[in-house]
Image (tube, rainbow, N blue to C red; front, top):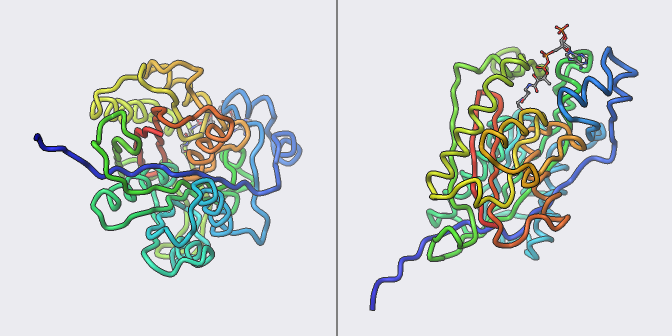
Length: 329
Ligand code: UT7
């Protein structure tokens, strides 16, 4: 008797990350420009960041993270039929860096493309892959955030160059049929937002279609900060509402890692206990689209995030763009 309702869910099979070997400390920066370890730590929580070698491109970082994620999932690369790469620092204007990663992994079937939502890129990529998997179009996806922001920084501008770093993180998703309850594994809900009225508050002052140059990152830090907490909490509340969950149900809050003060204020406003917050901005700096999967991997590897845990991912960044993803790990 009775009909048995099933739904397709995107279940996380594994995650992996990669950080370039070179570490740049606040003290090293203070020796070069007018700043101090104290200022950077107090205003941002950042203590160090990783910097890619000259011959290390975003695709190389992404390939390393993808390989680690596939190994963690116990999956052969050939099982993947979709690659969505979130990056604002592609190897070339085109083709998509995702194609270089696909080729590096020896995958020649399915589809691979880049997606650009700056610091919210990983959430946008996760939501995109999730929709493709739930539609039945693809079976297994690599969702990657990979960045070499060191290449677009003005290293003389102390208001921006101390904030960012390089790195990559990835997750493997698989479409699985399930009853589709909140207690079932997988991505429960995603919420994406954009508002171009804010496009000049955080941008790169170059590009192929305008200046024919790459350009450098420019940011009105205080303006971004002013909007961040409200936007982050809005989309997190959207995720709670869509699933009938609350902050108490949450096991882990894994935010985009831009600034410890923004993260603390957002967690506080959402009534999320401090011990549920995963913080890696001290070690990685702001790695844009890579920061969430990098933080996620740290918390999975050290045993904090376990199977069945409820995990909130959220980000806000250039555009402005912002978004959340609620995941049953
Ligand atoms: O990931 C995408 C989203 N991005 C973000 O979330 C970044 C959001 N914004 C921020 O995180 C913060 O606004 C910053 C960390 C960028 C700046 O912190 P703040 O508390 O907003 O500082 P401020 O910009 O108001 O600057 C305070 C002072 C200024 O001096 P005056 O004008 O008060 O004399 C700056 O010139 O700090 C000065 N300053 C520095 N001093 C030492 C700015 N950068 C530095 C520096 N070292 N690196």
